[in-house]
Structure formats: C-alpha cells, structure tokens
Amino acid sequence: MAESPDLTADPADVSVGFRGAMRRLASGVAIVVARGDDAPVGMAATSITSLTMDPPAVLVCVNQSAGIHPSLSPGCPISVNILSRHQREVSAAFGGAVARERRFEVGQWAVDQHDLPMLDDAQANLACTIDSMTPFGTHSIVVARVEAVRLSESVEPLIYQDGAYL
Image 1 (cartoon, rainbow, N blue to C red):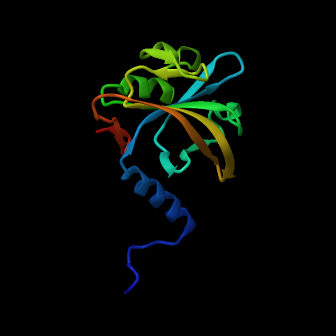
Image 2 (cartoon, rainbow, N blue to C red; image 1 turned 45 degrees about the horizontal axis):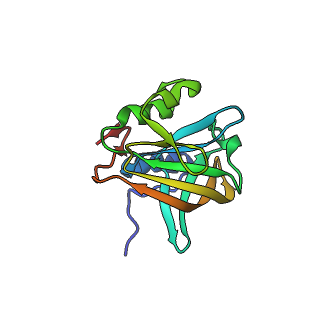
C-alpha cells in the first residue's frame, strides 16, 4: 500500500490534526465524583471506557490540572454516573458552566455505598475504587474496580461530538 499523500508527520500539524480527529469521535458523557477536602468534587468526562469484565473495571483519563485530580489516588472511592440524553445541563454544570461548590445542586443526587453522590436518573451508576493511576503527558490514566452497579430502565445515552451534544 502507498502512503497517503495527505498524512502529515510534522509535530505541529500532528497536534492540530489529532485534535480534529478526536473531535470526530463521538463519546458518551459521564460525571466522575470523588471525595474532596471539604465536599465531593466532580467533573464531566468523555474519556471513560470499560477495561475488563474480570474483574469489572473502567478506565478514566483525567487531566492533571482538573480540580478533581488531587482527590484521586489508589484506594479512593469514585462514582461514575453515565448520563442520559436529557441531562445536558448536568454535563454543562460539571464541565465548568457552574461553580464547583454549586455543581451538585444541578440534578437529583443520592449517595452510593461509599457515601459519594450518585446521580438518580443516570443511564447507569458505578460505585468504584481506584486500583491504579498512571501519569501520561498532561493526564492520568485511572483504573477503577467496579464494586456496585445501578442501571436505568431505558437506554438513551448523552452523546458528545465535535463540541456539541448529538
């Protein structure tokens, strides 16, 4: 096979091209919650995927500059709340549209087995414990074991692509 004439290897062009390529990748949206110093902290995330079924585990990529990052370490509990299509306002709040101390005022929240906020009408809720963290570039790759799951009746995920909800 011949190399594509449009493929670039110039580092500056690769960075710009990579950003454009990732904007084309549609992703589900979740809210990741951890214990902060004084109160729970959370962030909207699209970089979450299942890792293994045995043991049940997820992989979450978190920017090291994110407000939640200092609250993450092996052994710490987190909740992962996979959003439904009607929860755009929750995603926006945890994406930065609402001050950190007021984010949990958006949506209906209960607590999980670790006493962490869990979004009541999410597509799914995962109660997890962080197993490991690996720094890579600007992010940390967080591996969390899933200890409990709650599923909603319907399957209507909130999808994010190219800076907008689908």
